[in-house]
Image (cartoon, rainbow, N blue to C red; front, side, top):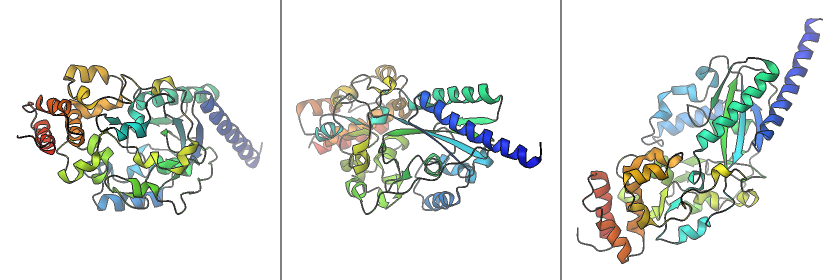
Length: 361
């Protein structure tokens, strides 16, 4: 067989394998699978400008690895393709997000964190997908990522055709909105690539207008230092007083920009039982959560992404929400119960919260 014939056969084999990978991915429960190359020059420029402006705040890991985040082949030698997947997570049952946000006595937790930790769910599925590829092809070089290393997952997913990056910096899909997780397989397989998604945000700026802390400082530009998700999850110290009122009752993450996005009218609730709400965290009472001791926190967040913030920041966040809650005996009593908490961080936020209810401290 000539070299040209061998190359043609190899191209056909890669095209067939790519089609099979997408089919296997759907069989494993992924809603979509796409393939892209590793060229991320524009995304890299945006990342470097964002870092230079200090908009990553205390997320030092964002700058730690230099350009490895935007150059997959520098992170994993030999990588020439990235298999990108998405998995819907919006739970079909549970309290209305809007209803919880409107009730100041309740705690709002981002919908992605209500069930099992997505890192574990996606990684397990991606491992199954790589085993299917190995069964068909034999051993091949790969590495799996689920928000677990320096990877520009949204930029890669956009290039792989899974959606476009919206003005709020989340990935959007015409048929699924934005309520989904992303995962990647870096590989040296020269698979054919998919075309990038087209941006359909148009003139809409609903996400910019709704952001409680005005963290979307311009279209496609988010200052993490102002973002409620950053403040409640990534920040480990004191939450700036100037931002506390705007946080409302959001104690873990924020979904406002997703809730208002017109494309999410097409979102389909997941049938993944792992993402169903646990321990009634879809609509919990703030005072009840604030009464948890550390063992209760660890027990009721076992297997959940929430546990990563730790008990101290959990109480810090709830203290702020209680400070924003309607004044009443239950709220004041809950705060007074932690007036002398052993944590300086918790005490500081409890003191602030009590002053919001005109309590002597």
